[in-house]
Amino acid sequence: MSALETTTSSNTSPSALNLGSPRKPSSDSISIYSPKPKVAGNGYCFSGPNSGIDQSANSITPPAHASPTLLALNPMSRSDSTMLLGPEGQVPPSILSPAFTPPTTPSTPLTGPVASKNPPRLMEELPKVNCIVRARIPTTTGTEIFLHLYQNSIDNKEHLAIVFGNKIRSRSLDAPREGETELDRMIRGAYTGRLFPGRTSSRVDDSPISSRVPSRAASSTSLSNMAPITQLTTSESNIRTAPLVRIHSECYTGEIAWSARCDCGEQLDEAARLMSLDPAGGVVVYLRQEGRGIGLGEKLKAYNLQDLGNDTVQANLILRHPADARSYGLATAILMDLESVNIRLLTNNPEKIAAVEGPGKEVKVVERVPMIPLAWQNLKGGVTGKEVGDYLRAKITQMGHLLALPVDGN
Ligand SMILES: Nc1nc2c(ncn2[C@@H]2O[C@H](COP(=O)(O)OP(=O)(O)OP(=O)(O)O)[C@@H](O)[C@H]2O)c(=O)[nH]1
Image (cartoon, rainbow, N blue to C red; front, side):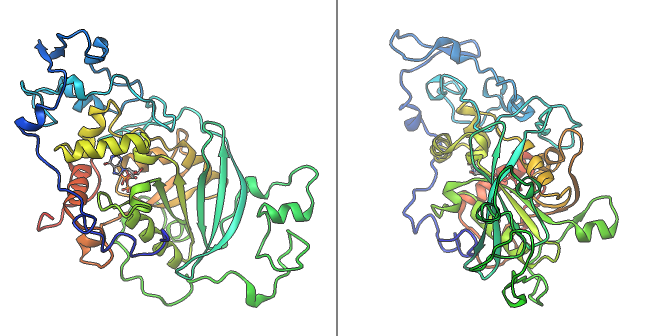
């Protein structure tokens, strides 16, 4: 199913997929922890020599780039821990991973001003990015998008920019490459207008007017679903011309596997819908930061910990990951490459707003556009169920997301 279809997760309730509901930790579930730890002071130690656990791993030291959330919620420093608890009310080391697994996207210590509950991890220097190919994608909704594939100087992942509208261009893509022919340029997508059989020049849009990229932005399609906006300081005209931007972290489960544990698929669809209607165009910067940067395997472990009664933040911490292992330097660099430096950012995440602006304020968020879950607006197509409700609540209460809980508390 296309990520742009608005019905991705709508009718997929956990019960329809025969998923069990999360269990609260009970004395029964505690008994599965093996070997049984012996409490020593505030920590644990093992009596058996074959525990298989590195003793030094029993004290949890947050990684260097851990956000203050991690420090605050470090299970061994919390007297009121509500996490998966051992017999003495503490986290049994048998469920702690023996070592911290580095996040998949590098992050660096904080340098910028603190503007949110979880201060942003700003890279001291922006990574270098290079758009190596771009292609037109006609989509199932009728909107045409231009998919830009990026290489970068800090990881080997293929991060993407999904561009809506025909005003936004990549500087690195358009730059001439030594020795290339016009055909080479067209093959890598460095052309203006659109391709058609027999086209010979990349630079001149010699296509018939009737075949130019259709724009739904100019149509009279209703914007009634559009979320209310929170205005930041800048002139009205700046806001009107700034493209709508979504910095979206990869979520295999929410975008491909119909998961109703999160609203990621819904957010991607909604961002695409809004951008397809916006006269200023839009960009989805799609970062390969699965599981808030911890990777799919670790996220799946986190889901099991959530079914054992922990919330999304606690599960990460038990696995010795930061609550959020992402950084956004790549997004900043990609937006600069797309010459989109004044942006309207679709997010509820205060950390993302501050971080995407970059260490030298290379990008400016002139407006934040909230992403209110569709179900909370009584709109169709939203993800519903206990798991997504718990997840959204934890993002508000634990991660400071700028979202008001619905009045009925669901
Ligand atoms: N570790 C972990 N990652 C999750 C979980 N649920 C979703 N994710 C990942 O979280 C990322 C999406 O982040 P969100 O917190 O939804 O959104 P955000 O980007 O911080 O904020 P918004 O811009 O407001 O959506 C994706 O990479 C998902 O794979 C979870 O329970 N645990």
